[in-house]
Amino acid sequence: MGVLSRLRRELESPRSDRPLGSGWLSGCLSLLAALTGLLIVVIRWYPQTFTMPELQPIHQGGYMVLFLRFVLLSGYVLALLSLILSRYRALAWTGLIVSVIASLMATAQPEHAPGAQSLYFGLDYFIVNVLLVGFLFVPLERFFPARPEQTVFRADWQEDMFYYLLSSMLVQVLSFLSMAPANFVNLHFDISETQAYIAGMSFALQVVIIMMATDFVEYWVHRAFHTFPALWRFHAIHHSTKKMDWLAGARMHFVEIAVLRGLTAVPMFTLGFLPEAIQTYLLIVYFYSSFIHSNIGWRFGFIERFLVTPRFHHWHHGSDREAIDINYASHFPIYDWLFGTHYLPETAWPENYGVVGDNVPRGYWKQFLHPFRRDRKGVPAE
Image (cartoon, rainbow, N blue to C red; front, top):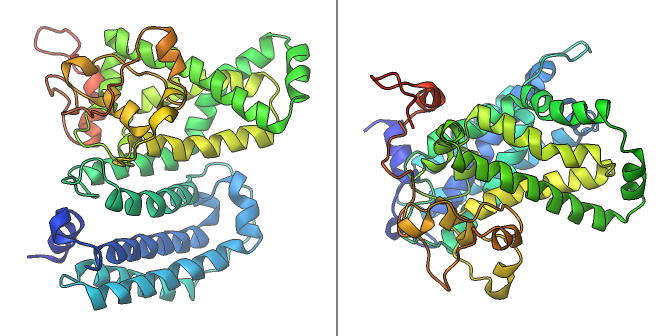
């Protein structure tokens, strides 16, 4: 059996083969830390290509060097811990070897002359997302699973990780498309009085209003993607995952990402909110999206009446009869209550996930083309 096959087998091993103290979790985290360190080194080799201007203060402040050292040291320590605890050591050895390669590359970083940054890919944005979110949700899904039989690295996780990578790398293009509707509103409508009024509100109140306003817009955009067949063909890609976890939310067609972000960004960037409030909301969204898709089985009791939880959103992704076209809200279930689409039984979770009929192909590029595909009669595929 090849190295990659052994590595994949360990990552996708069932829960019964990786009890607490088996070295599986430390092996996974060592590999995650090692790959993160390697990608940071690549960023430092090619900063004009792989860094976002918004994250330049972090790079220029020297924090990235300290962060890189911490990540690589974590990779070494976790790999050694896994080697001590585990019977199967592909994860640990891979994490250790990648950490060594990243360390050697870090000592041979080439010199770069400063220059203007025009076209860039958000590799550093991908690292921040995966490192923070992955280190948080991999242990949580391991210790508090809604479905204990589901592996943390379930089938198709590589496909969803690719979605995560691509949407991060194309952050410049997506940002341009996302800002286009808001820029149109700002250019053609004068709402300066409203902007001044909102700007005078407290920081916390602004964050809450942003969440409520964007969720209201997202509710109707999301519902439209379920209602109209032409839009559903794009949204079906997101629903095609048959296992829910922190990576599942990344599976979205490029067209849907552009439309959804563009329309939900309109109230956020037109009503006069402070940049700090907007940045706080965006930080909340990145974690919250992974949270509501995650395989975490916590019970929230009365909180489920006021905030979207994993169980609430899992019902939206269910393919059971009672799970069809429900629970469109991303933050506040009140919108589903008001507009007749709320469904949340007392304690139950959906039995099955995915698209009814299972007609969405596997693989990123096949899924990218799927909404445009026509059947033999020339009718767009649904």
